[in-house]
Image 1 (cartoon, one colour):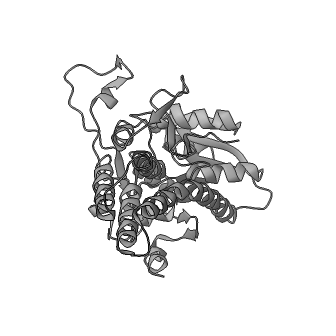
Image 2: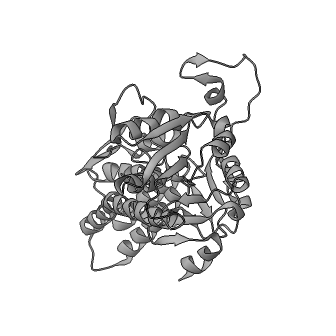
Image 3: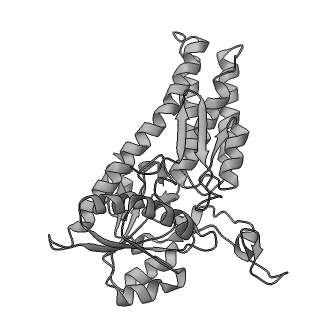
Amino acid sequence: MTLQAIKYQNGDLEILDQLLLPHNSKYISIKSVNDGWNAIKTMQVRGAPAIAIVGCLSLCVELKPQSFQSKTALREEIEAKLNYLITSRPTAVNMKLAAEDLITLAIKLETNNSININDMKEKFISAIEKMLEKDIADNQAIGDHGAKDILRGFPEDSKLRMLTHCNTGSLATAGYGTALGVIRSLHAANKLENVYFTETRPYNQGARLTAYELIHDKIPHTLVGDSMVAALMNTKSISAVVVGADRVAINGDTANKIGTYQIAVTANHHKVPFYIAAPFTSIDKKIPDGTHIVIEERPATEMTHIGNLQLAASGVNCWNPAFDVTPASLITGIITERGVFRPEELQNVVDS
């Protein structure tokens, strides 16, 4: 059984506080949109799909006990809260797209004269609650599509050595995971020899979170330093790389955790297939290419400190972008719940 990082039932929302992992597994209550915004901003919850789900569920929690004088007042409250949640972390597109869809739904419900205010609130909340179930099903489909596509390039009796970066599993989604979901599907099919995963400096999502998940699920694994990837590919015969995505431009350029781009360059040099695994909600059809993706910059303390321990010299200047953009030309395939697509196919798939 995979980890459950998001617990929600009938208006009660708890999340596994990822700032405390791996040493302390503690769930915290999210009682309002403000709680949700803070949990996303401080990275108590992270991962593009999970950000959208927790943000939207925090709105459910806030709306459930409230009464509104009119459908318009409810719609205005929904719109204001969702636009606020978008500001928590700008690079991951899932929260933005979910907000746009939910605002459109609220407007439709508001203008439907056959629906009263109580029905409007109930239908709106129900739409958000279904996001949890859908995300898990989508992730399992991503895992199965990805495993099948990757295995096509190898003899039937092969067991693969995979490489992944950052954390893309149950801790970054509603469950199962995207890139880590592909790893889980390979493992379930007895096709995985080992998964190598990076520490993912400066925030150590690999060393703290991916390690936590792989140990929990008893998946064969090896942790490597971020600076070891080229040597790893040169000596260990890596079968393929699979990573997640926070935003995919319509041409296939992909924003993901900082360090992804250099892994893609190294994979290209060593002729190792490089895959992106992400739900369709990570594809931003309004963004023509990666140069239009806003890259979030994080506090310098994430580089200079680990927890409360200062490692760097006091007064050092830092540059700490949370993400980088991998060009579509370096990407073998983009794994989604609808199948695996080459970057140049995205435009037609999204338009169809």
